[in-house]
Image (tube, rainbow, N blue to C red; front, side, top):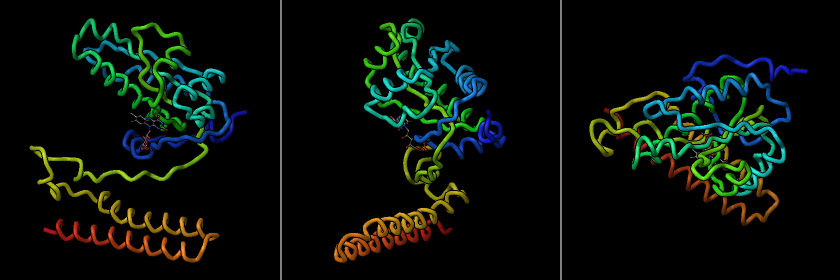
Length: 253
Ligand SMILES: Cc1cc2nc3c(=O)[nH]c(=O)nc-3n(C[C@H](O)[C@H](O)[C@H](O)COP(=O)(O)O)c2cc1C
């Protein structure tokens, strides 16, 4: 019987899906409906590709022994076993090389990565959790699926109903990763983004929260150890505050 988690999901536009997507590594044991798996794979199928050669293929893996073997091949990332579906993305290297010579392998990875990102976003839209995984032993993955020599695994998308809601990991602010018209930091401050400003304060908030959790966790240890940790946390918090205030001052016109 379908649960409410399976049936209903909030309809998201693409920007919301981009913002809300998190890498999910804990899954419930609810099976994933095939129409949703199809929707996700289809999102990969329509991704851009160099000259539209579509150099990827997708292997949907439901079999538990194969998922277990994949988790092993992914440098023992056993959490993957919990995900009821894996989608293995492979690159048809021979095909791309025929068209693009030296640039081929570069394009092949880019194409498959675009397909992967489409899948992650589609998963988010249909209410599924996902994670992109590419820390693996190529040979072992190829062996599991008896891949021909010119077909190379690029990555795995794990899929399933999430059993965790991770917080947004810290990301750089837009002005720290974007330059205008030239390379370099000289443009800092030209891009002003309300979200980024709010994010700044969230760093401090999160620092304090992590600190509190940490102090709780060491509560069983010696008083001396605790005192040192509190001192360290105070130092770190004031360093972050000073840095932020410095930046804020710099940004003021
Ligand atoms: C190229 C690449 C390889 C990754 N490989 C793994 C992996 O092997 N295992 C894993 O748990 N996560 C993997 N991830 C997911 C990242 O850890 C994750 O995207 C990052 O921590 C940021 O978290 P977010 O996706 O929730 O924003 C990979 C992501 C990328 C882009």
